[in-house]
Image (cartoon, rainbow, N blue to C red; front, top):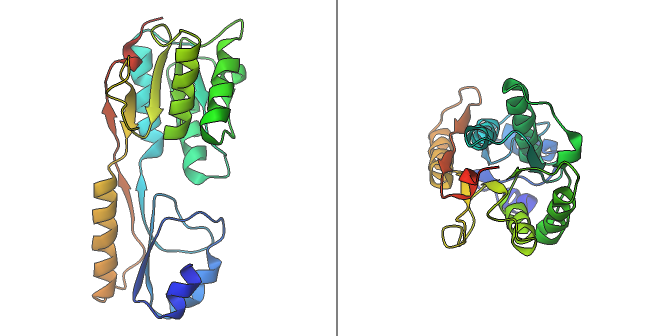
Length: 225
C-alpha cells in the first residue's frame, strides 16, 4: 500500500507502521518525500515520530493500583515483537521494581492476541494458588478479555483492573473500567503539523514527540484486596 502511494509521487506520508523493517522507504526519503511515523517508531529508517508515552502511562496505572493496596499485580500483554507492547511490559516491570515489589513471572502472560486468548490467560492466572489481587492489561482487546474472565468467575468486585487504551462502554460496566487513555487527537494534530512543516521546506534533523497519556479513574482500579 505504501509503495502504491509512493509510486504516485505523493508529497508526504503519515504512517502507523505494522512491519519491522522500513528501509524500503529510504529511496522515497532521499527523493524528498516527507514521512512521519505515528504510534510506533520506524525500524532501519530515521524519520519524524509521534509516540504515546507508553512506559510512563503503564507506570502510572501500576501506581494507581498500588495506592489502593495492591502488591500482587498480574500483567496481560500483547506480542513482544510489537514495539508498544514491549515498552508497556517494561513499564510494568520497572514500576514494580521501583516500588520494591518482587516480580512474579507466574503473574505475567505475554503474546496474547484477541479477546479469547486474553480471557483464557486471565482465568488461568486467577486460578493460581497465589492469584493476583489486581490485573493490568496492555491493550483494549486484552482488557475486554480480562473483564470477561473476571465477570465469569464472579471476581469483578474482588480483583481490580486497569487497562491501557480506553474501550467502548467502559463507563457503563460494573464496576466501570479504569484506563490509561492515549490522546489520539493530540497525536494526529502533532503528526499533521510535523508533516506540513516538512512540506514547507524544513530540513532540520528528525524530531521525536512523545504525547502524555491520561489516567481515567472509573472504579475498577479502586477495588481493594
